[in-house]
Each structure stands twice: as structure tokens, then as C-alpha cells.
Image (cartoon, rainbow, N blue to C red; front, side, top):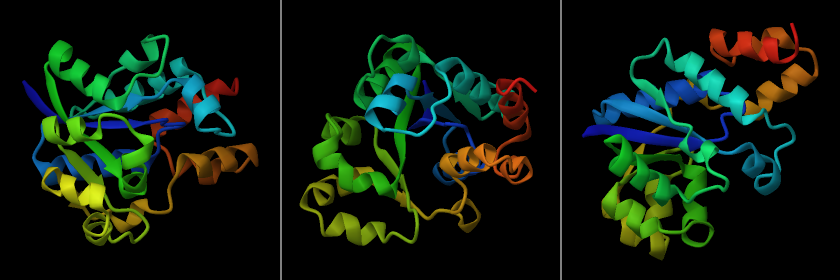
Amino acid sequence: MIRALAFFGAFNPPTTAHLALARYALEATGREQVVFVPSRTAYIRDEQGKDRAYTDAVRVAMLRAAAARRPWMTVTDWEIRLDRQPRTWETLRHLKDEEGVDASLLLGSDKLPELEHGWLYVREIAEEFGIVCLSRGGDDCGRMIREDGFLSRLSPYIRVLDTPEETRNVSSSRVRALLARGEDGEAQKLVPEEVFELLKAERGE
């Protein structure tokens, strides 16, 4: 059984921050790999209301291009191949039961307030797999957890990691905005080289 972290998200597109945070968490927790789990485009567009959603195929291709040069990184398109957006706990169970990957959930501290009312099976996720939380934007995660009754009960299963400073101003939305304004040079700084090449190919260049 491979011990891993499962990194869920839109990856729309994948950025240098996504990769840096995943590698940082991998090293801090002593896991063997990070599994990137891209959401379905329909979910990104309809549920999250993103201004621009690259197709399932394009986002998977970008992640796999990045993974090809990083042995610690893998990609699963299991959620994308379904005809619905599964719950996180379902995907973690699939990884363990069908792919031999025992993965803790890796998430940002911005997700902590959503867990009680916006997610299902949170206790099952915490108790069965564990949660690794990356602090974001100066969040005091310890305080957030202590002062929230729901989160405090899950605290034995949550490990908090400080976010490296250099990742804090990098986001997929910023990349999309730069590309929309034609500022390719600035956008290129925020994504892996192989991802930028695919972004250019997506525009027909």
C-alpha cells in the first residue's frame, strides 16, 4: 500500500504553487507520493462558477505533463471519468480499495470553515485517512480549529503545515487573467514550463 497525499482541485491551470505546496507537504509528512485529483469541468463551471474552465482533457494533460518530470507526483482521472462529481470520501476509498493508495486529504486552510456544512463524510475522511492542512494567507489554523466545536473534535486527525511564503501570490485565476490580457510573459512565470506549452497549444499557437 502506497502512503500518499491526495490533492483535490480544479488545477485550472496547474501552477508552480500547486506543485511547490504538494512537494512541501510530501516532504513534511514523509509520504511517498502526491496524487492530484482534478475535478470535472462541469463542477468547476456550474458549482464553483469559475470564469473560465479548461476542458477535462486539457487539465488532465497539463497535470500529466507536469507529473512526467516529477516521480513523486501522480494523477488520477477517476472523478473525471464518472458521470457525476463524487464526494471526496468516495474518491479516497477508491484510491485505497482499487489503486492501492492510502492517501490523507491535502487541503488549504480556506477550506476549514466549509467542512462542517459544505462537505459530506468529513468525520469518515478524518478518522480513516487523516487531513493535512496548509495554512494560507496568514491563517491561524490552530486557533481556527480550537475555536470551532466541529473542527476541535477532529483535531487529533488534522495536521497543520505552514505555507511557504513564495506560494502565496500564485493562483490559477491570476494565470487566467494574465493570459486574457495577453501578458504571457507574466503568466509563464506562474506555471511549469510544460504546462505553459500546453496553454499555448490550447490557443492554437
